[in-house]
Image 1 (cartoon, rainbow, N blue to C red):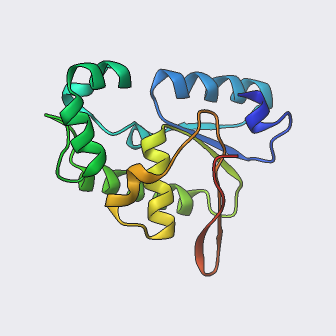
Image 2: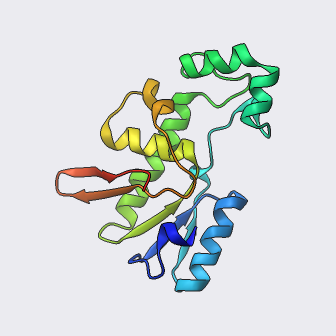
Length: 159
């Protein structure tokens, strides 16, 4: 994790999902670099209903057809009880736009989950919801988005 963010990150603000695995990293960085942290519930992972708390291998082992259907068509073949993809994308993109405005002109670090990162990248590059699960997100990977007078631009992803 430290290799991903570096020893002296040029950031003024940390925004984090409240989920423990993200919040713990945010707290460590906050204490190490004396940076303010904002916890935002809207950056939690997509709700996956009946798949919650299960590993990918468990889902594939017990629900292979459902798993395959989801990755073929993540819009219409959501797990039972899952958060609808359009609601998830709206939640994340609204939160992203709001924090971008709130902390405009600052270098911020958003610590969140793969699905949220996918939704933000798709939002920035104007990709369709169908492509969301075609974006690979590495654990502890860094994606950089810069904002200028023309809008947001994905500078790099998964470094």
